[in-house]
Length: 310
Image 1 (cartoon, rainbow, N blue to C red):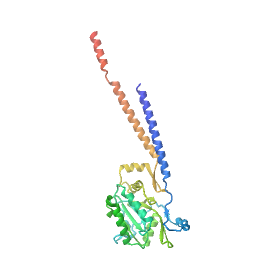
Image 2: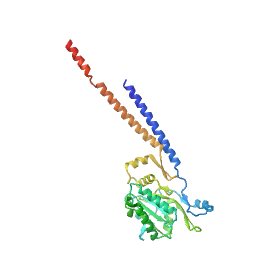
Image 3: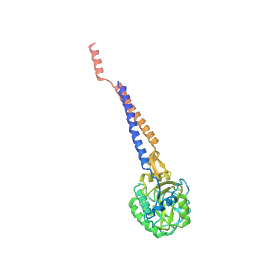
Image 4: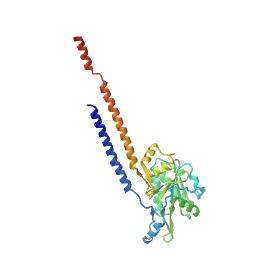
């Protein structure tokens, strides 16, 4: 009689777990589809509408995942020192932002968004990653770079050693062209409004200089940025929890975001359900065995009394 309730409880538990897992996965899939970001090219304020269509065809990100960035490119840092791009690679992944420092709007928003996301991470600049900002305007120099760097080092504040992890560079046209082409960053100068038209986003690069991930727009999900850095580091940073989450999430190059993999989530839910069912069956089996082998005190007293009466 005890086995039947146990079997019924096991079946009920399995059905409940299955129906709990499925709606959550469906909701996650819908959220991923609804949040897909399309289009990375953005125009500066003031550009005539009649020209916007032609300009948008010429600017944007051409994703070059796993492409090698030339690490021997010469630049100048915010202190006026000659450096190589490779000086910031080798040990940690790099978050690269391509901007120009005198940009009236979008570039500031790109840097604001990047630093805001970096501040929310437990990973620290200079320890777990490098933040490298490069001006694609060859007319800019160390003075503009130093001014911007001071603003964002202060903004990053106590979240890490930004003094060692934030690098703002300027350079000459050949080095700029080589870098922007390596990461697929297309931009152009419009002489009539005296501004650059350019895409908005940041690029995460491995310690060896291979393009790993693109995050588009002017606001970057801390989750997506963390996943990108953990993947780009080749498991040198992050936690076991990151590894588990990365098993459930997949990078979508079309959107520059990470989305839930429904089938993997279902596999995990199924595995947890089986483990729960097995544990429940084992516990119930042990309880039944204890009940079967337990000595009934009344039975012993009755036997003794019968013996004395005889």
